[in-house]
Amino acid sequence: MGRSFEVRKVAMAKTAAAKTKVYSKYGKEIYVSAKNGGPDPSANLSLKHLIDKAKKDQVPSHVIEKAIDKATGGAGEDFVPARYEGFGPGNCMVIVDCLTDNNNRTITDVRNCFTKTNSKIGAPGAVAHMFDHYAVFVFAGDDDEAVLEHLMEADVDVADVELEDGKVTVFAPHTEFFKTKNALADFNADIEFDVEEISFVPQTNVDIAEDDMPMFDKFMDMLNDCDDVQNVYHNAVLPQ
Image (tube, rainbow, N blue to C red; front, side, top):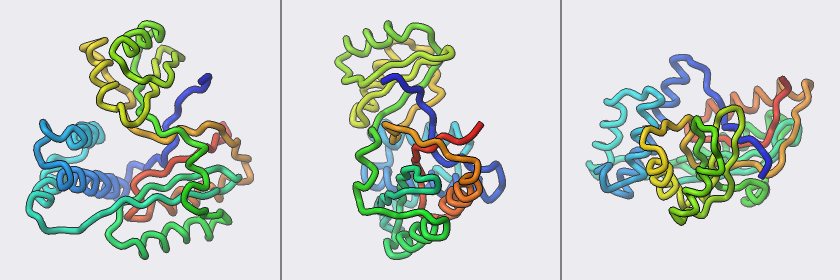
């Protein structure tokens, strides 16, 4: 593949408002996972992964428990996923993933982020074909060939394994997330992941010029402020 993985998602400032947004994001995802797959993490691997990830991001236990209780109570909102695609400042490609209980509100909010920053929202599939939907794992290591060999022996349909600066990055189809994670845990029982997620990885990158940075920052900030936006993926390379 010949490319290093970067988590190209909107990084949230460490403010009280941003923390509330993070809690809300995980609360929705945990609620949906528990409602669809059951509230028992041992029987619902997606829920277990979300809970572990939320704890890593310092989401309080009461937020997690409230979301699960809400899902088991039978009442509450019916959140559904929504995905929007388009071209942001500097002609970068953007994928916006949402969870919403009101599609009209969500599309209006997301469209405003595009139109108010001279960006262009596109039709479904406008840019997604230029991203790979991968399970991505990053961890400390120095032998990518041994990792690849183990994954192949475990019958993981691995897409690529890279080594750079003492970090091994594994790319696998998003459908093989848990199979890949279990195989890596078998490879090293003490493994600690810097990244373990399903992500959209761009096939090509776009360098953002200094002149486009103010509008790019505004665009990302506006998306961050949308309550229904869960994740934003892009192929922009920002100036150093």
